[in-house]
Image (cartoon, rainbow, N blue to C red):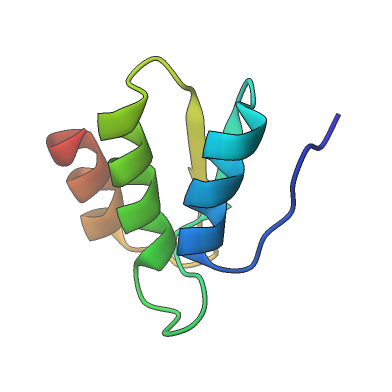
Length: 73
């Protein structure tokens, strides 16, 4: 069951707090800048809820994103 669909990193964090999902699926790039907002949100969520599974997707081949996610989480 999808409990929330959001378009911004801050809204993602708010939805996770409100809905307490079993898993989070996000893209690396999210509005408003389409840079690494989703990645930063995933790292913040990992710090707040270390046991929450987070799947980060990207259509871009950028090993730096994967490296950052592994090293900083």
